[in-house]
Image (cartoon, rainbow, N blue to C red; front, side, top):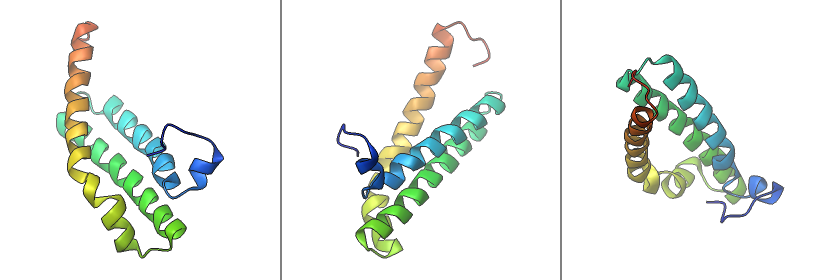
Length: 108
């Protein structure tokens, strides 16, 4: 969503909230995964919470930048991406398990 471009312009643009939100998504997911001790339910919960934070920040910023109501911003900035993002979460978890096994991590 940044069009392979960067800089302050992108952070201040309509999708800037999602870019900032992605930082919180990564932090939340990483912290929960570290302490979940391979509890898949907890790890998935951490991913969902992180995704929610990303969506929330992105929607609030999109609403502000584009002068949209919150629910209109939600309908264009989140709703179309929920299913694809959930699929990506599942794929990321599955790939992560395989990478851990390849690296010899027996706590998978």
